Image 1: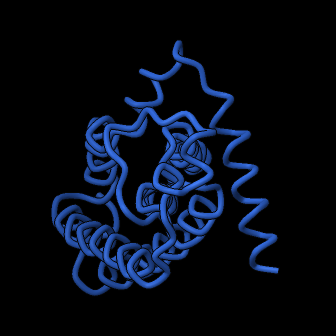
Image 2: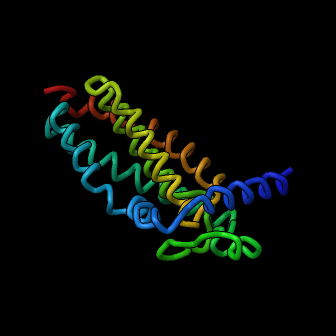
Length: 191
C-alpha cells in the first residue's frame, strides 16, 4: 500500500514538475524565495495593527514568531524522522525531472514552505475575517501557489506539499485560538 502511494506520488510529481518551461522559471523561483512575500507580511501586520491596535499587535508578533518556530521545528522533526529524500536527490527521479531550485536539501517530508505559508494564511485570514471577509480565500490561494512552487522547482513531492498544507492549517488554527485567548486576557480587541 505504502509503496503504491509513493509510486503514485512520484508519478504525479514528475507530471507536474515537467509541465514547467524555461519561460516561467524566473517567476516560480521568485515565488518560492522566502523573502519575496515580506511586503505581504508587512501589509498583514499593518491590517492587524489597524484593526486591533498596538498592544494587540505586539501579542500578534509574539504569537506569529512562536507559530513559525513551531511549524519549522515540527517540519524538521518529520524530515529527520522519515528521511524521505527530496526528488532532486532520489535515484530514478533526478534524471526525469526539471530541477531549477538554487539548492536541494537532503530530506523533504514534509514541506516547510507549505506549512509556514498555510499557517500564516489561516492565522491572518481568521484574525481579519470580521473586517475583510474574502481575505482568507486570497491568502489560501497564495499559500497553494507557494506550495506548488516547491514541486515546480523540483524539491518536493505532492504528498510533502499536502501534508505540509494540512499541518500548516492545523497550526494556524491553533495559534489563532491562542491569540484570541491572549487578546481577551491581555490585549484590546478593537480600536
